[in-house]
Length: 226
Ligand SMILES: [Zn+2]
Ligand SMILES: [Zn+2]
Image: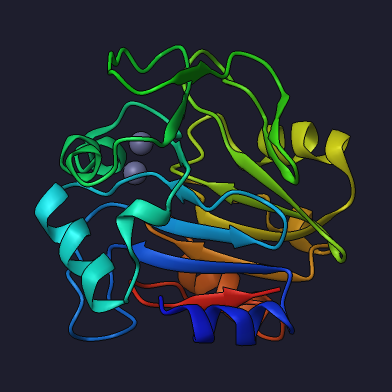
């Protein structure tokens, strides 16, 4: 992203989430297969990459098409050790020698990069939090916005109810974005203002139909500004 564009949107939005990789493509030129990755830009926080999709070359190509410079990323947050979220990591790290990795204990990964092991709910940096690893497997990211907390999930293997409950400790939840897996307790979305069911969400159509006013479709290239 070029600086002038960045400055322009920063005047209007606190958080900008760009889906870099997803099962589907929102912008047709982008690579899209089973997997998930998004870029999280928040005013006052380091730029964060959430998950890395299933293949490095395809992630890097999508970043290039979207104008995302890998070198601007300061935090790489890995939700859980499934290939469709981690297999782009090694290739990405060839293009970035300084990002801090935030990984759940279940992800056995060694690197020359600084690594933070997210075993419990914690503040990672100004405005960006982790639920910590839930059920010994997966962490979700919680981002602070003036509207409330924005929760970003990988596959939600621990279950959306558990993830929301832990995330609420950071504050009222405004948005939920990412893979919801087999989530079916749709009533829990009633009080959330913005929902983007992406990646592995099995009931994507049901969620979009039930909450048409606050749901948006995901897909690689989708940008969500809050
Ligand atoms: Zn997944
Ligand atoms: Zn998974």
